[in-house]
Image 1: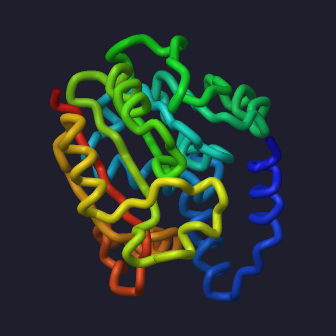
Image 2: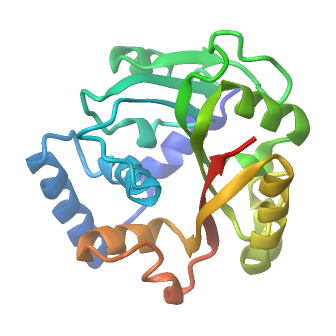
Length: 233
């Protein structure tokens, strides 16, 4: 599969205007001054903000499914004791291994994640992943199996009410969600809502740049659903 290879080439060729580049450069400097490799630390830091987990006092294990180039895994802290990445495309496999990330090439909408024991993961991240899943029942039950009691799940996905038919510009998209549809699914599988906002890549970087609350810039036309849920059953 060349999906991630093509995605990587597309991202590398993206043009940025002066303002966007200024913000990215500023965030890079900020996060490097905090001991991180780059501004990509902003992604998992956002998850920590939303879950209100104090990484300075809490040891955690994290798992990401369909993580692509691993942006959410590029936050480093000694209290993150285990990082697990699952993807059906092994394009970044060697890079992940060099970063100390466990990588397993699997489709867990069909395959059991035998390498991860029951109730051992604190945070699961599904960043633009849930819209790709066919057998949602198999997938969600497997996700729940590996989560600790009161574990958290972070989801970002296009809001079909806002993106409309452009949702299908990615030929691998098969399951569109609205906020209500996503809430219905999560409550059906026994999760409690912590936060749900509208955002996208631009608004989350603006929120980080200006150090505002999550969802502050949604009025700029954010077209994605960003949400955190806690396992209860």
